[in-house]
Length: 305
Image (cartoon, rainbow, N blue to C red; front, top):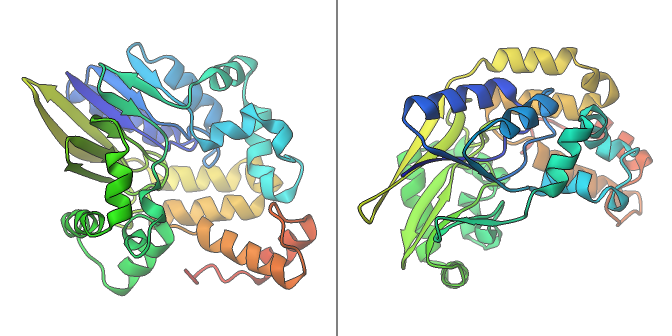
């Protein structure tokens, strides 16, 4: 059986279209989608419609879908959530209902476990290899190839007792997760971990190409093939700049344009600056007030990681 593992599309229809075509060209028989289909690029509605049209797929929700399933927890009118508000208002009733009904996790073929995120990125010092901001700092100071990254990341996991304990807590078999936009896989003690990276918003600073992975299970053996697929990132950047989204939330639009252009994270540094600005103005709660937001927007250095 040949599976395409796809995560973090973030409204990028050109990237998703390219990945689906590439997967079909490689004989994929089933699609496994790990969440975060919306918020980012201007085609969230079209992306959800395309996913609904897949004939053989297992689809779970990500944290971005939670914004719409639990709207009472978020003030979508605040500046901080304008991106979510714009997408929320753009989705059709059918797509809203589809996203709300998605499960948080799933199991396929008895031993392939789907979830949106796994806390490997939270442990120090190995977070350098799994946190997009730390990864950006590492790559800007001493760039490495993807092969070198995989070797270092695996070594970091094996050297971290808490990470190994977390892995042992997972069910045996294949464990799929996304969320941090860094393509990765490794096997340890009967568990194959696969992060396909981000289809629509790659942040692994190698190249701005759509990432996904192919999992092959055949004759008791498992093979992982990491794929990178070209799409027209300039089309995406221009569409972001020209969309209504850029008018409603110019700051989020700018951040997504930067990330598309450079394939490295800008959102996390901005959110960290946002929180620092809040503390400086005497606000410690999250989300921040619109007053804090406007000050943070004016004072952010976008090239500071």
